Length: 131
Image (cartoon, rainbow, N blue to C red; front, top):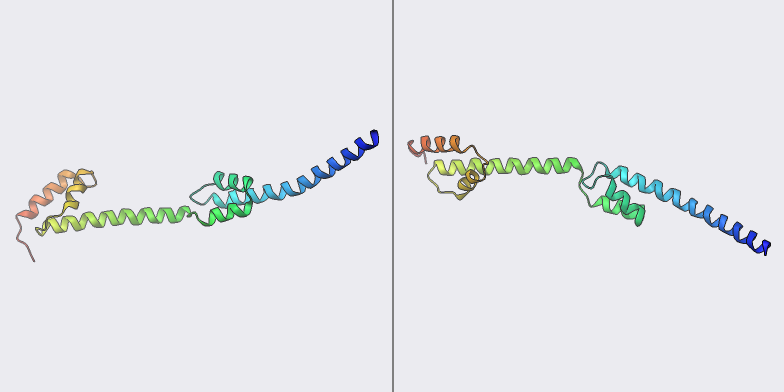
């Protein structure tokens, strides 16, 4: 009986050793994926958890679909510039007597300073159109 128990313990020891041989690279890969994800939209934690539960390869595939933080900042700046451009075009259209609903929505959303915009609009109404 002692012989069977010794064989079982030795097999169990080999199984644990193989488990650690697989687990350590898995965790190192998951940590690497998390560190790469730190500079992305998803951050460190989400890719790290995906890599732990599925595999580091799946974690890298997940990261390939996410944007970097620099891309997000650039997109936000482009949206902000586009909104400013639309506001200026609306003011220009209103100045030239073209009715435009964008200026009204911009004033309602507090995108523009209401008083300054109204003063400018009133001052432009008195000027003749140059079209």
